[in-house]
Length: 96
Ligand SMILES: [Zn+2]
Image 1 (cartoon, rainbow, N blue to C red):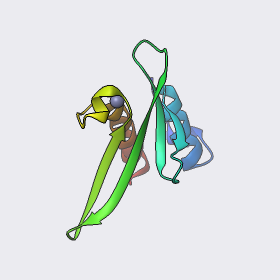
Image 2: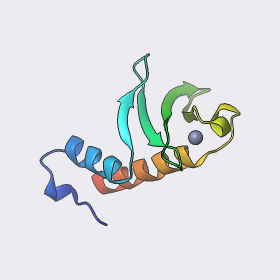
Image 3: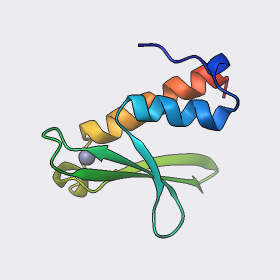
């Protein structure tokens, strides 16, 4: 399945379409950060993957958090992986 930027009027519409095709819904955390709803593998619930970017020691630090059991224990989970992979795909396509 391929989704092309040229089929959409704006980067935002393209971005939403790619996330939705991956089963991801864009949302925001209560404190206004970018976040994504990702269904659990059995589809019974959604987990929230959120993004935090900040400057730490002169470097820009990106961290991703997920509220699934693995994510809550600081482990990498497939929900974060899916969001990161999809985000990278979008950034590549948009030349970001
Ligand atoms: Zn997770």
